[in-house]
Length: 526
Picture (tube, one colour):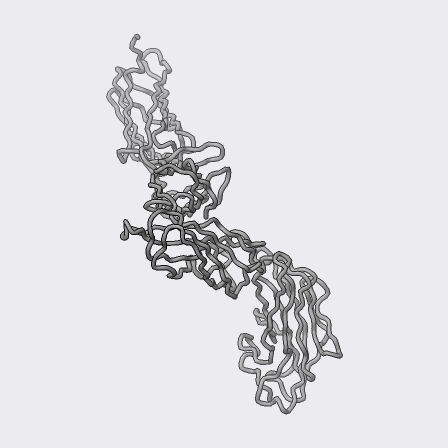
């Protein structure tokens, strides 16, 4: 082809550091040179970037520029210039990322001619700022449950908005559960901050599997409908034939927060050689289990064909943190049995087998706040009368009852307490729902009945509450001590998810109010 005038204008592009990393800042340096015989007048350089390229800075001959179209100085014959483009490339690892430049100019001594020179620069990300590691057992047992852990980290300086990790499960492995959010059969991570890291725990059941099991995970950066493949993660583990068959059961119809549950493990040796040092345990990732694993040392030896039962008692937490749960209502607690042992032929190699998961419904935890105040937490006065309370004189307080922290609906709930003979209701009260408290003159019981309390564990759910004013007239016999405002306080209801009766006795409320700004230290009757 005929040589064109524009062919005398050269562009050279380099990148620093020496390789582009997807998700990390890089600097593209474009150097140009006028090797024609004419001066290039009114030169303008327009730059184009790959989609989702995050531009951080742009400079021309050391001067910062804030526009993709750069007005250059007149370029003399032999003149040169340098453009620095710094930004973050989000692209396929091993794929093409195309940058472009177009230089427009006029030249000529007698007749001014317009022309342009375009060029493209292709770079391929070699690595990714998303670091993945896969932790699997040294070997797995056929026909058993196995677990694995994906450890992920954003090694770059830029937050990653959305990451999807597509599992390629091996043949014979049935995925059961994972600690990550799952969408369209992919693990979904959002807003992974620079330097942040975490783990995805996954679990599955091994069926009829080959001697080796390959696990492969394909991560991608996602921007709307566009996605860019990052470095895949792969690991293969060997498979051993099953040795012990396990099943887990419990006689409990539900797990009761704050109490213990006994699980029964049935075991049977289905292998072909004796086993030693067999321990059995119950495992669960549910935060209501006080321990993830509860083990007992049960057998020194187990011969092929032998079977039996082991019982293990597991304490259930009365409360957990909101951050520990991903579901806030009608919780079913998954657990499975596990056995650890060694074979006679390989006493230095510990093996394990596990059962299928069992699911047991959880009876709702609940929190009942029962207290009195003379002033609000903000310091506003609620009560009236002398502080400390005085014998023969009236002092009023407000009593508060709150119900929260529930994971199931509670029907026919009631909180009730008994007023002492020297305490009366003023009639002033407030309630978040239903009709508030009622008073029975004959029994002197104050009752707050709630037809249904829905799950309130979710922080976005309002607390069920009532408050009412009581007036105490202390007697001479109470001088020097705190006076009771309401006693024999009891909460009752029925969990509709597990059909379990609920009840809780609460402490009496007195004029001793250590957390009240005005009443603190003024609870003893004068």
